Image: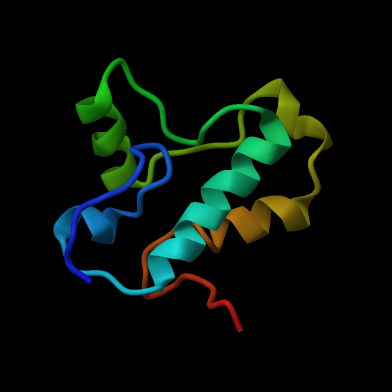
Length: 92
């Protein structure tokens, strides 16, 4: 897969580079889980370029008040999905 396509808040960094596999779907699943647990996306910015910069840096956190009641296990799952492709959990 080589097409650069996706929504900025959910797109995996390797998609931006144009070389990716099905692992990018697990990144997106981690972003969706993040949103489901707190109500906002893990990557934000003033514009698309700023959001993509945050995605490439994998710069997200659990600092909001919403996260105080989320389990350590849920946060660990997100950390293991929104990470470098070599360290990312697989679907199996």
